[in-house]
Image 1 (tube, rainbow, N blue to C red):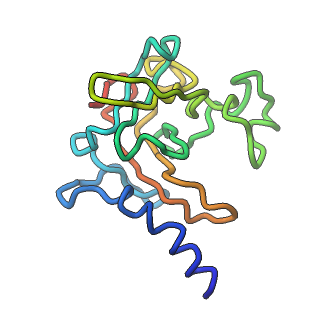
Image 2: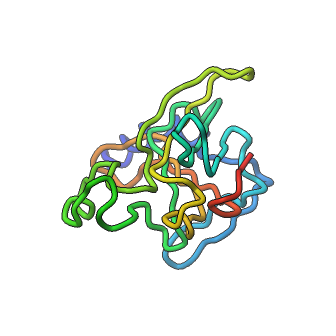
Length: 172
């Protein structure tokens, strides 16, 4: 019971971040994973670019405002995988890529690096992904999953899921 109270206190500040507008619609759920906010309802504080010059032409996720300091962000395919391909990417062996805590470089779907840049509307964080959105690796990408904070030794990390129109279509 004490652990539940502690987790509640840790997660409470992130509840507002995870909460979307009441008019938001959810799409693309299944028995295996939760639905995501439909692409047309995704907050303007989040963008996806299939190619982005600041990421050497690879895909990027850009976040602003309340999403500026996300713990992590990935894209997922229609099977909800965030570790793809299984081996060979980033010089990783299958054993390393499928280990309990593989490095981000083992997956094209994970952020390879991120940085903050100034824009005319303030700061935004750029998360550079491992491949172009137009690449064959991204052919089945359908959503973005953002971890708002990391809760150590727990599977209760606060998450937000945003749908994409497709891997080659910019969002916001």
